[in-house]
Length: 93
Figure 1 (cartoon, one colour):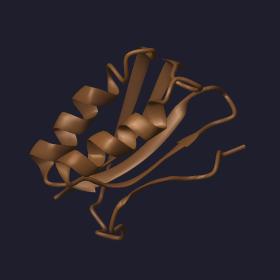
Figure 2: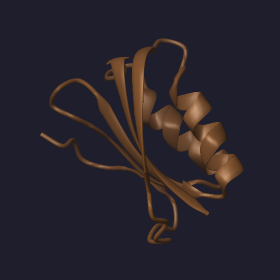
Figure 3: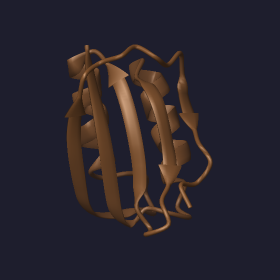
Figure 4: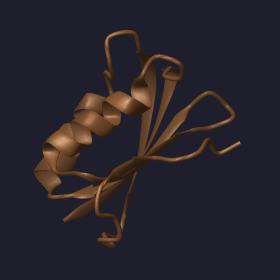
């Protein structure tokens, strides 16, 4: 099991990025959350089997149709198993 903190930048707010991330995560059985940041990025924290979190990361680098992802930064963290679903959190403003 792995845990990734993902920061996506570019045109990722106002283009259904978080909602699409939620749908993709649920399809893959990945748990965690996504939120908008004040600097225009989207932050996501995801946990799951390594192959599924890697597939989620691959998706995050492209995003939904209207997104224009320019950069993705990833931090690996210790898996905690603290989530039951993938949530959309309030913005980190």
